[in-house]
Length: 256
Image (cartoon, rainbow, N blue to C red; front, side, top):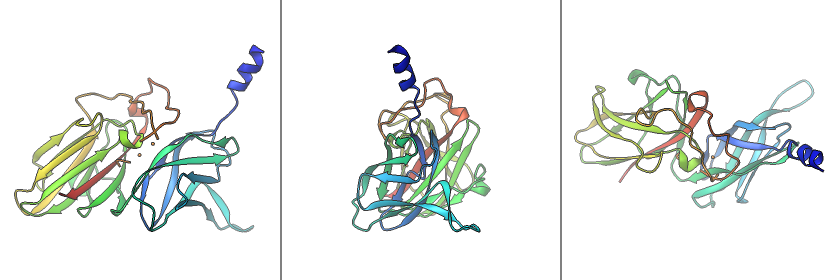
């Protein structure tokens, strides 16, 4: 009986840890990748808990006809899907996975463009945009550039734990010359929120990096995974350091 129980415990089970990006805009089609998981053999479906969100696997041409591309899907979000947090699961040879968080919103979404570790390489965005990005280890920095006008109030909302990411980051706001103006660190657990009253017309830079104050650490999230966009699921084992992982974060820059 003990041997049977041990064998049963070792049976493979599809596990979903990260989808990239971790959300999509209402009324659009977005390419979504399963960025990390276990026992993903023959995964051919992403399943959502709303009928207005559905996925088809990406294919590529071949001599024998279109062939599926592993772990890549096109996710369509109908116009009538309410904004909010939803669940996504992967389905394959070893069954249906645990859920991860998938955020649906009205604002346009973009991916950061690497390399963007220097001000000259900053990813340009418009205000009222969601930026989906990845911190690739402790030395990686992401820089975003936006334009604002005097007297505007700008809200920078960096979501990581709310989307099942274990990233513990710090947000720093700079002027166009790189002078630090304001920083935000762990206002909401590992997540950051920065409110900024613009003093003058011009360009501003947002820098996101792993927090130097709390060090490189692992945060286990107990609910579905990605801007900030978070949730249950078997978390990955404690003790695994963030420097060895690609950690996801979503940044929203909006007017208030």
